[in-house]
Image (tube, rainbow, N blue to C red; front, side):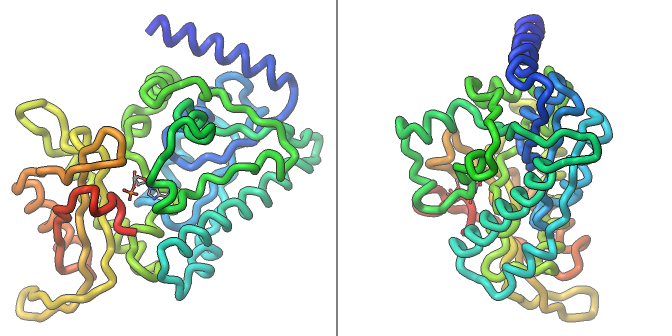
Length: 333
Ligand code: XMP
């Protein structure tokens, strides 16, 4: 609309003034905040922005390709995709403790990003090195780190958003979303031409499927989980609640599938199966500090379970998590 159009013009002018003819790098995760920041900065300075997208191998089905299609394909932004899945999975081998897994994933993420940033800082080939690091920091992040608001979840589970990266890299900070609330960031994203499905996506934790595979993370488990989760999300998007006219994806705050590394017995045709179990999790919440499990329609759960068991060979049992937060947390790890 008109107001958002004006806002974009002002934000673009501010970024151009701040950056001048220097170069900017940004860590793209596929999440809402970094995506909107990338789209806005790209609108302002085009090829002076380079996005670095680190694929840790723990993303959802086709997520990496979707990010590339959008930013490189449609927006024609410069994006460096780093496939670091072997590195991450290698370091995670044998590790079962949730907090250790988070630390390993967070630490490697910083290492890989820093290595790419150092390359871009040095640049060469007639290209000047980057002097700015852009981040999708939004207003609630600013308030939280200022200590005005305390977030319990941060102490219970260590989130991997690390501070101090710009100082370590010797880069100046560019944070064009610092004054915006989440809903404003979403509106801005849509106005910048990002698809609503991307901008209104449920939150996804930094450690990704690493904390949705209970215990040791293995590629085999991640591959099974990706396919099961894609079916669940598709059914949530396609099942419309007649009372509200909204999809169950939009009626839930967060929904996903959890991989349980236990096997149970099943029967298929004339044979017996002995395969893995997944749990479906869907919650409704306004602040993620407390949450209720969602009363999804039985017909939808039935269809989802039938599809997962029939389409994903290796999974023969689907359960639905009926625990609220507290005392359970939203994620299983
Ligand atoms: P819990 O499981 O603590 O989750 O009820 C609350 C919200 O935080 C997200 N979450 C994380 N996000 N890194 C993140 O970036 C993490 O390590 C992490 N752990 C939990 C979770 O998805 C939910 O939205």
